[in-house]
Amino acid sequence: MGADGTLRRLFPHSWVPQEHHFGGPAVEIGQSLVYAGTVHHGHGLQPGGAYVVRRSLNGAVQWEYRTDHPATALDADEETVYVAYNSGALTALDADNGSMRWHTELEVDGVPTTALSLAVAPRGHLLVGTVDGRILECSVRQ
Image 1 (tube, one colour):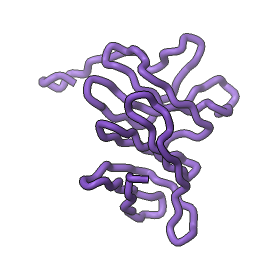
Image 2 (cartoon, one colour):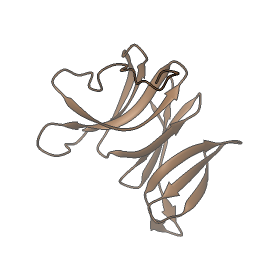
Image 3 (cartoon, one colour):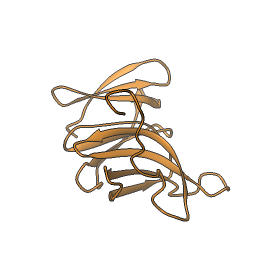
């Protein structure tokens, strides 16, 4: 968005010509955009049909991480992209190359839950807002 409030298109959401992508949460890291979404083929979500991608501001794909579940939230610091999925999983991806650093299933007192929001907090913590109205604090040093 420009200083005067006008919108500016960066690049098409879909980078694979034969795929139609539906967008999801996004965050800017340096001179790039990391966002999540799903691929639409007209047959519902297929295995590997959800993704997290990092693209430079000119649209070039730096990395892509495929998964079976759509992301509900994501946030990042300079080193790590944190992604919550509708399955209740929480994954940390390396911000430079998209490889998985760690993966966990969210639970509160042994009961599974799903994150709807994430926020990187100071001192190595991640704040997680859950579908059942809780705010959790997780250590990101796993």
